[in-house]
Image (tube, rainbow over all chains, first blue to last red; front, side, top):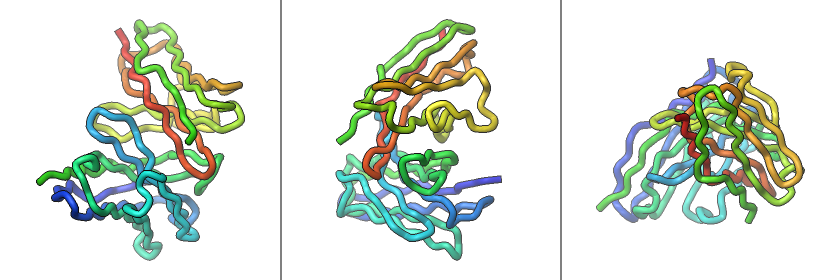
Length: 122
Length: 106
């Protein structure tokens, strides 16, 4: 069975950084991509970026350029998303999702993590 | 940037057909996926590549995409189908989501 299990709730102060992990199991990790998607309270889904697990290449949403870093560790089949310089606008539920196949125009997000709540508050 | 437009809300009676639309410039030239998102749960892929249905998704769910509009059709709508639905496409290497449609079954 395919699972994406994310790390737990985070509470951060403005200006801090947060690191969310996504542990994948049940499939060949390097054969697919990982996307990160967030949902702020009362808002829709917002794509943050993707990482090609095979190559490590990344592509980030323009509004997050310079603040987000996506990495992966193939030895532990875990993807990571770090978001820096947090503000209250970053308070959201953060999801990782598998990109099938990989990343690109024919790709879709077929398995999702359970979500990680990140709250930014002074 | 590329935009996908969805109506904020759609209402349907039980056992009737719900049609949710997603509009974007030449969307028919791209693949569209659809996700069901219920409160407190992770989104679920219900349609990919315009009209393909993942295993485990009921046949009541179908999709089409032509011109500037993609459509998710839910036949024989059930109370359990009440959720937010998001369309998604790729544009120049980035993922784009529509704003979502809240489907109410009443």
